[in-house]
Image (cartoon, rainbow, N blue to C red; front, side):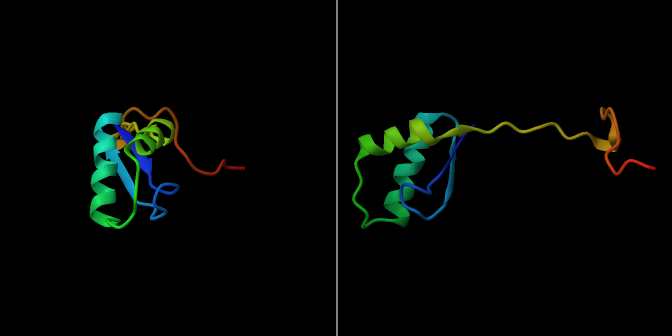
Length: 78
């Protein structure tokens, strides 16, 4: 999953996501037309913004009942 924060494009700090850069590009276009309809934009600039600023998001596995944990977390006893 690709994520993007609209901090430099429209300065609203909205988080957007898509399966890949093309889907994320569509989400950014939809966001701009829905939330910022008066803002002029160039599709080439937006595609470049998505290519440069988007990042991958991976979810970590969470273990139930402490299975799979190698050690406990907490302060060291003295």
